[in-house]
Length: 206
View (spheres, one colour):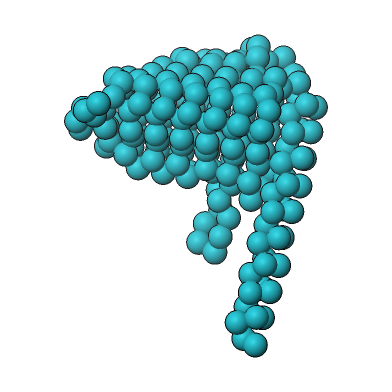
């Protein structure tokens, strides 16, 4: 009897998860449409609806086919996917990208190529957010004078949990970034890199 009750509970729990994720996906796709985002097929939102902060005067926002946004939610931590795109900025997320509790902030341009996987809690910011000049930071000119530079993450890159990807960075195809890394300079293709600042550890043999 106990096993039957346990099976019924697990079935009910699994059904609830499926229905909730379906609802999250439907609402998220509607939000993409409302925000004039170019979107492919098979986009999914898992565990929560990603937060969208998209300026009406963006250059372009595109999300390709089969992209999955998974927002972590359990007893230990909560990390929701967020997409922030400022005026005249561009955000391109290509096909079959998967991200888990990731925040992307595009002030100029962020481009993520096909089949990239990004671990929980990673932050991708193409701007300093604030001026380097202390006097400018005191006033309204602060954000306007913050330095920005495009970010490019090439195909099949895997980024571990809790990383920070800074402005002007290109991560080469098929490279792996270790969890907790701070990436402030380019990383070549086909290598494993990690640390703060992130450096190449070794090449990946094909």
